[in-house]
Image (cartoon, rainbow, N blue to C red; front, side, top):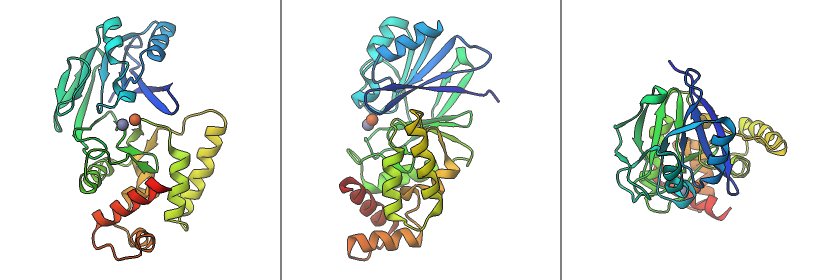
Length: 259
Ligand code: ZN
Ligand code: FE
């Protein structure tokens, strides 16, 4: 099993462009969701790296905006969701497809995760998940194009991945998400512990990511909508009974939007 070397390239206010390399081929790299080209080009020049592939999760500009300039500068192969408009020609991927990066010896499985956008995809392989704006640490993306039912199903598909899977999200939202998670679930000690740890990392200018799936299942309210204590908390907030996990999820998502 090849070990991935994954590094964040910060962009804009809180985006991460993830840079992938493998030990055997240290010069060849891939990036996920390059919203901007300049920080990637600087990283390539500084490390004398060759950009071979660009993986895109969804069509938002803060995730795809640097793609055309990077392709022009490097000729990198581009992979993107089949159902969304992409800024350049690319290999269009559906759920169940595989993205092959032959020069890196890597292969990722594509998972359909509609909700934040209608055609959003995630890439899973080598014990790593690149999930764009679907799953955040202790949170999830806003519902811009999909329904609560779609987003809940997408999140549950990601939660079903093996517990040690490293989770590389598109944004650094962890501290704010944990503040909300504590409001939903005040008696969850692990959320409070993680919040302290995440605050320390951010104060030192370090990323809180990657997370891991096992941890997310214990602290992320959006992955816990089937639990009685989350349902009770959401029902208290709604002031009415919430008869299904989708109704609980929709209430918690709406609560977070106003938080
Ligand atoms: Zn987005
Ligand atoms: Fe985004």
